Length: 383
Image (cartoon, rainbow, N blue to C red):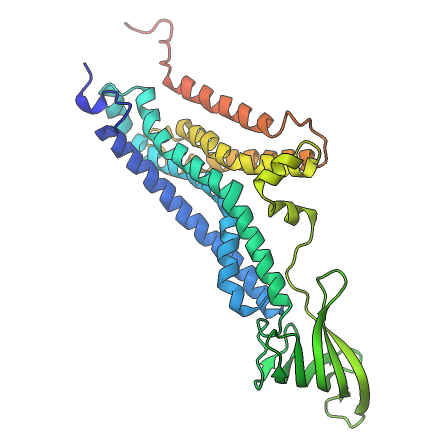
């Protein structure tokens, strides 16, 4: 007869289940925190670079980092589950706690139960993120950048204040500005740049009585239309300055970070729209299967990490970590390859990404099954 702590209970977690569940959740939480920190650090570096080049306004920095961080969760969570299960169950094997639990009557099904209590809720939450929250975050980020590119106020220009010219070496000053930030009066611009041929620096000073901000036909390029002004240009330290008066002079501003590619557009489309278009559009089909791959990969990698965590007490602590990362790298690259094949219509629609998930799941089940078998005694061994 099994002890009370090991009896099956379909409705309540047993004491041993709660103990194993805490180990797995602690490992997944620690791995997720480290990976999220790395992801946010990379996003912050990229965003700060774009702010320095004048491609996005500084006021939207934290908002865009948060919105883009939501989009990294479908990649981050499966890897965190793989590492969390590996670290949590690996510690139990190294400390011989698994041997004690198995000797007490806890079979493979009992060990699997707390793992499923961790993996299945994570898969459900990630499905919500991948199918709804991440596309909504992409749409919001694109909308914020688009609206910011149409206003000089959001881009950092304020009437009566000298500010650095976005993406260039110079300063800009505006005397007056309209409420929507598209028209201005009394603008002063000073730009310095290196002259490679003369080996000196050139300076341009531009003044305009009025002007406005407009976009190119593609909706990406931004220009300042300067009206009724003067332009002075020349080399620093020399007296060959040239003075020009213009009726209108257009100056290009740095392009905003607006990815108009088909991939970015499909990434922000609602999942219901992708489902309706997947029958005819291979690109929509590939994006839909990619979103479904996130929750499925949590279950597949969680089960794969369980047999990989089995280790002996004398084995190094992170001996299986390299093997798990290699397995994740192969699995993830196969998903990327399948996604590109689906987008190019090189795979049948029924294949989807199942040809990656199912073999990996069968491999995980085979490793679990083979790990539970007892080895037959060698011939000639003493009874």
